[in-house]
Image (cartoon, rainbow, N blue to C red; front, top):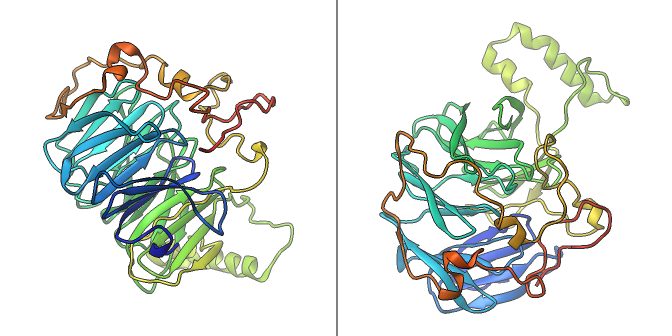
Length: 408
């Protein structure tokens, strides 16, 4: 996608949680596009009230949009873009570097702290203070509200990843993912896989969550180091794409090889792979490790180079069944009926929100701004509680076909 497609003065671009919408920040404001085909983008909303928008995040296909501008980089504004009203705003102790959303949590990342809000009423639940220096605001939040896993760098000198449970407000695990600092991390739609890349940009690894076990390792290249800026799983977590400052987008296939190495249709590449495997025991560990890393399943060549790219793998066509299972709770959870946004955010907060943990603060310097009266805490969910105006954004799994996700 070229800048001309979304308007002049591009400052930022981000896909929503299910890749059905693209949010673009510009010098004059921000624009929201519906992603329905690869041929064109349909602009569904444009705002010119706030210039120089460098963060704009939309919550699924709802009307909740979070905006941060360069003129007030410490202030987060939450808008109801269809009504043209501000829901609330918060100010922080330093510049906001990233915002992540799911149906339960809103996470704000600063360079040395992370703020976790309850998206139902925007109440600040926890502040992770004194986190390792994170000047790029690198973090990822699982879109599956059943677990709300949060991942962020555990070190500024190597590639450690901290996985935090934003629902129960507790640390889950630490993953020693890379030797060099992290450049990109992302969760699969179910929150059961986490992909990461380091600043070297040569190796991409996939881990199981919450265990933190390495599942896959892919080699993007060997000739040069690159800046990987974006990782994205397909909705079914069978594919993973990676974009960088080069002209090539890599797509990897997540498939487990049989223990015996046998294939139904042996090929020349399979034969060479077996030869590499047999020879790896005689080679240095670093060389044999390279041989065991899978290469890209497919590549896409871009017309530009040297720019930061954002990639996603989306399913644009097909029936509702294509999406079935893309965002489910853990398999141990009982099946849930299709819920609207309002029903989802009304779920009671799990875990004690008043517990005191070492290194955490209840306020952490965040200051709540004005809250529109109709959205005061006592009134219930922040917004999006009118089903006739705001359609369900969960996909039904009962086979009835009711509650099909509609796009504004």
